[in-house]
Length: 101
Image (cartoon, rainbow, N blue to C red; front, top):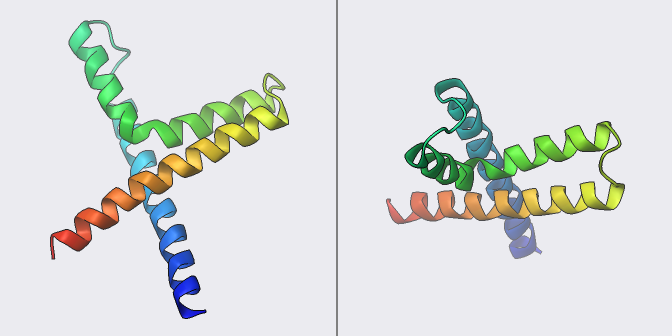
């Protein structure tokens, strides 16, 4: 039971850490950059979206769902992908933290 509880705690913490990193990077990019106009700017945009993607995906899916442009199943699928993506980013963060000790 203790191992299950610890694994669930790591799951939730990793997901929260990944979503936090995603939100921070998405908002910093929005503050600092404009729409990409050249190829290098587009490449930077895609590199940032690797990290900022879960937050942006969840925000866009929520906006579409509220305006009825997205079905419930599509919205649930987008949130599931965003959650899994956040979990993967969070595991990367935890892995870096554990290995730098």
